[in-house]
Length: 454
Image (cartoon, rainbow, N blue to C red):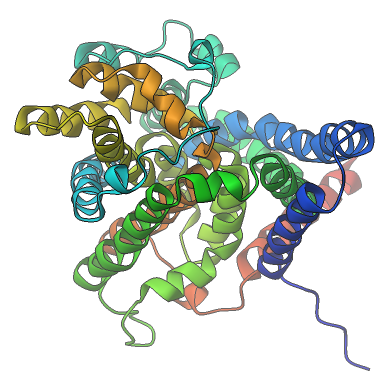
């Protein structure tokens, strides 16, 4: 008798996503407002499931970044190679932001959603007192902020740039010290096994968390929010799709080319299919940081060697903001048209520079893009209160832009990974869960060996 094939995580996540949208629609249109819908279902059951799941993810994100980066760096054993890989990834992450904003602004000028949507935003304004206001970071402050005064404080506060810095310093120091530092390295390897085991457990309930988060989002925002500013939403989605298909597709073709094991050209849809669980969760949670455990799992199953995955994705959470940059560009052009405040050439240049700098160290959490947008508005002299025009529908554009941020991590990782020989192409073409199953089996074997020793 043949064993029944288990449903993949991809299928479960997509089903949960669809069911969440349907449930949200039903709750908004078929269930009357009142105690049962608002307090028991939305603020009770669904909120508990969704937020508890996110708390479980955040519980492991910071130790996962620290430990996986140290393990990845010490696995390379060559400090120069560590610097080379990290440097290439950082350049791709940072310098891709500038053209992403430019492309987005171009779509904004062509479609001109601000002029089309004038007078349609009634009812989506929020209290100006609730709008976050931030100031553009000075480049020196950004650079100074990378080095923490207290490494433990950086871990407690979840300052990702500082956590990455701590991990890199520890990893390189272990490599330089050599044999005397091997016991410490084994501690990190063991800790990595433990965190991966916890992550595997959290991922088993991921579809339930996705369902709850999406259901609450669509029940509260609803579809009227989309319709009220539909042209702005459409412009953002078009710009994001263009960036994924044309820019990422072109980067794959030019900088990666073909799969060495099959000779076939790599295409965006292939990477998209393999990264689908991470993209689905990024879409539903609107948090690239919360998506990190799933992103790393997908990366390993895509053929990223452990050291490559351990460097690519934690760095991407903080440094890769292509999707957010696209949102910034469209939002500025939209608000310019809506408020009838034309953009000058100098203002456009200020937007490009400020938004690029603002991506440094921005938290990979829901709503971070709006904080960045306030910085840009201050810099070009627009009223920060204008954010209220799009605040009510931010979640609708936050979800796809987060997915694009995460997808960019895979693309840039593939580029650098092939250049550095850090992609296992046989694994790239193997059954989806092969690496994770092998690693969990290895962890189980080590646990059994410890038990026998005791």
